[in-house]
Length: 325
Image 1 (cartoon, helix red, strand yellow):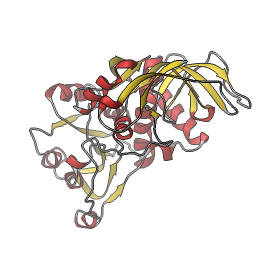
Image 2 (spheres, rainbow, N blue to C red):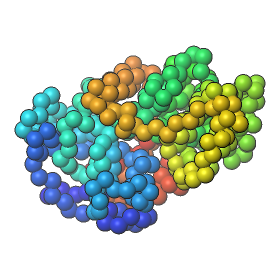
Image 3 (cartoon, helix red, strand yellow):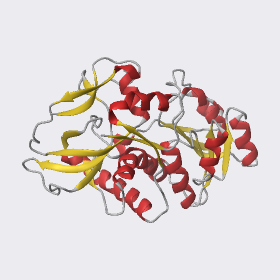
Image 4 (cartoon, helix red, strand yellow):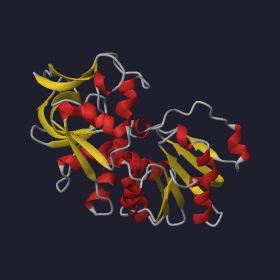
């Protein structure tokens, strides 16, 4: 027996229950992992509220990413051994002291990367990587806008984009978050509570605007995000922290400069073992070289996951939060 955060019905943070669960032994193609640190992500709130349907129905254990130690290896598993450190960003079920999971979705954690950093970097860091390297190939000629610049993905993306030579603009909601963003690669930071971010982007770029806008906020930043793009620019809507966009008007893309729009998700970009390993290797290399540091700014006991959700949804957090079993 072990403990996990179990959701029996969708709703607010109060539906998160710390309960005893059976883990069992790994079957073919599976490993059992004893977690040392668990990542908190906005997608967890989408599953909790029912915005995203639970993959296996209810009850479910929340959580997409974690790091830990392999406790047992199932039949037909190669490449992993008992005692090795691993991390992963899927499938759902990481809010637990231990779990059985597919070996195919785990990667080994290299020396020099802490368990907390690994738990905080897998989903957020691999998201930053596919946004910067695959959704749009960011380089020295790129001007980009990142909403929620002081969030978990935002702080990683800012550092990485800056290392790639891009002009990096971010939006935040407070002066404290602005200072944090500036310390993590953003040359220009806009407090959207005090300024019209689209107008400010036009000022910063002398009217040229951005090649790409990365938007995980959703309802509150649409359609103004489109006004931040130059002709043929790309709007990458990869989250909806303020609520889903329900009135997307395809005609706006024509009106505002033959724009492109995409709604990507990490899980498509790491759907094969080859893609997963390439993404993780790129991320670990960026962290190992010092180009990117993983800011773990909040640590919360696993049993208090509901408090962590309240803080995340009220935008009281910066950088990454990890749950400690």
